[in-house]
Image 1: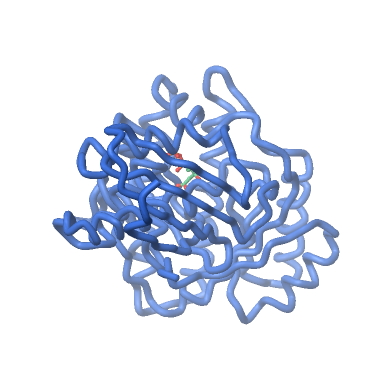
Image 2: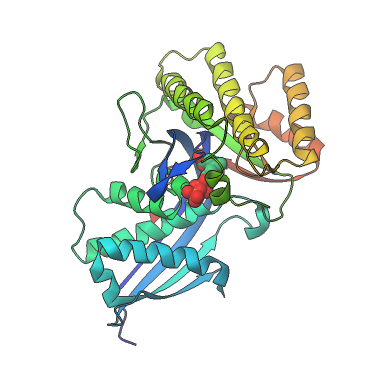
Length: 339
Ligand code: DP6
C-alpha cells in the first residue's frame, strides 16, 4: 500500500429531535421539517486515513471500537459509492475508517446521527484537501450527512438545527443552524435507559412504513405546524412560564405522535416497553407535585429523554435516583470538533 496522503479525525455529537423527522422521499428528502437540539457528550469520534490506490472501486476498512463490523458495511459502502458519484476522484483512494462512541454501544442511543456526521465531516475535510470543495464546509457536510442518515444532517451544527423548510428558512437538502434565545441553550437531556436491547424495527424501516400510512398527511401537517410554533417559541425574547409549558407540551405531543405512527402503521409495531409508560406516568405525577418544568421526549426506541433546565438538575437527580435505572447525562452542545 502507498503512504497515507491524508488523515483527519472529527468528533461529532448526536442530537435529540423536538419536532420529529418521520417519513422520507427518495434521496433522504424528509416529508416534513424537523428541529433538534445538538447534544454535548453523546458523540462519535471518527478517524479517516486515505491512501492513494488505483482500484477504481471504493476500497475501505471500517472498525468500531477496534472491531470490524460487517453489519455496518453495506450502509457505509452505499454511502461512499454515492459520494464517489459526485466526486469520482474519491475512487483513486482507499480508506481506513475507525470510529468509537462516547456512549455504550448497547445503550439503545441512536448512533447514526453522530456516526454519519463524523464520517461526512472527515470526507468533506478530505475533499477540501483535494481542492474539490465548492461551497461552505458545514453545509456540504450536512448535505452528505443527510445522505448517510437523515437525522445526521442536523448534527453538524451546535445548539439547535432546522432541517426542512419553515417560515421562509431552511432546506430539505441540508440542515441549517437555528438561532435561539440563550435561555434554551440551558436545556439538559438525561436519557433514561429503560431497555438496552436492539430495536425490533429499524428507523429506516419505520420511515418506509409512512409511505402508505393512512394518517401520514395529518402527521406531516402536524409536524409542519409544530415546527413553526417551535421556531417562534425558541426565538422569542419574551420567555414566560406559559411559553416553557407550551414548549413542553409540544415536544411531548411530537414524541407521542411519532410512536402513534408506529402503532398504527401496517404492519404495526410498538417500541415502547411497559417501563417506558411507567416512567412517563411517574414523571407526570412528580412534576405536578414539585411544580417543575421537566418534560420528556422519545426517539425511535423505548428510552426516555428527560428535557429540563440546568437550574432544576438537583431536583431531577432526586427523581432519577428513585427510579433506579441507568442514565446518560447530557445537555445542549456546541457541535462537532476537528481533533
Ligand atoms: C425518530 O435519521 O435514523 O430519531 O434517515 O433512515 O437514517 P434514516 O433515519 P434516522 O431517523 C431518525 C428518526 C427520529 C426522529 C429524528 O431524529 O428527527
